[in-house]
Length: 160
Image (cartoon, rainbow, N blue to C red):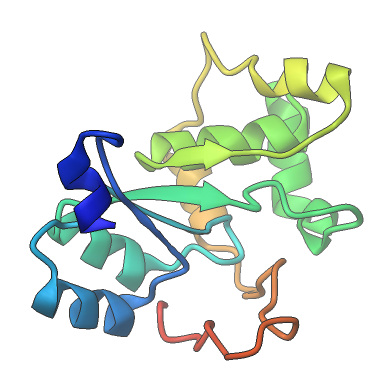
């Protein structure tokens, strides 16, 4: 990737699903620090150690699966549902606002036109510090995306 960067055909390079151990290994030999580490981020998988490490190295965190997935356990959480209701927002909007307010990029996925439009309606409101803290305090931990389909294990659960 570094060679491609030197050609000028790309302006930045990044990684995906790198945990702290893999980032340390990469940074031990890399001449370019990745611009971004794309990882699963939501209140039930906040990865505080990994995000802090990314930040300490100047690596931006981008959250995928920030809305969970179809029938995600995220949408059964009473804290999330009550916050959304109190704000007059969808649970998805609350999840997106939570990630954005944490300083991350969020990349929600939807094929539904109305949901895509609703996901953009984040301007003009914020979660309070107390509301963010409530979402930060959700006790259940789970990943929406697993690595069972991959030939090697990439998720080690060591990013809390």
